[in-house]
Image 1 (cartoon, helix red, strand yellow):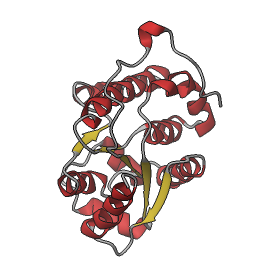
Image 2 (tube, helix red, strand yellow):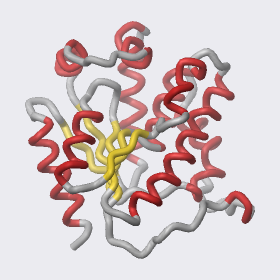
Image 3 (cartoon, one colour):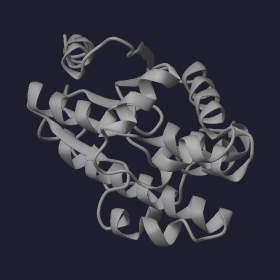
Image 4 (cartoon, one colour):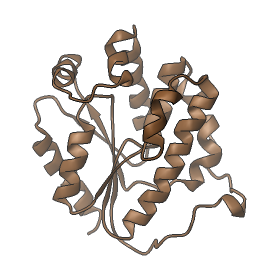
Length: 215
């Protein structure tokens, strides 16, 4: 994969203050594993900003995006990813940032939903990689299917992506495989097994990693 593509000047990211030591952490994993809860805890713990990769205004358009054909659907999520990268850069000038999903989710989820290999999605995203703010650490959260079902049972904001995990045959297994592939090729990856751990336990572990990156 070519990650050295140079975008034309007009399409380069707006320069923000890059002279800071604030960490940028990303939480990855399947829907319902606890990313949103953990992101909120971490933002409070490290006095930082929590962002979701599908931030406004994209978050208000997600229902329409599900009705798009595959390539426009991918373009929608790519647009959201580029937009949130701008927001990450602005927020990093003020303090640490925690992202609930980022580029690995776009690849893993798009590949699973449209039945293609993750390498095919990565190839389409490659020209835009140079635009993205680079995480300090990307935490890939894993758990057993039994634990995931328990967490999904008490999830308040169930969405189409959540119901598809168990409603679409093979979807959960494929997503887990896709995230494993992303982690294996991600130099910022830290894989965390979350079975038996509370969000507070995980927040302690992740906060320590992020703080160490500033030392």
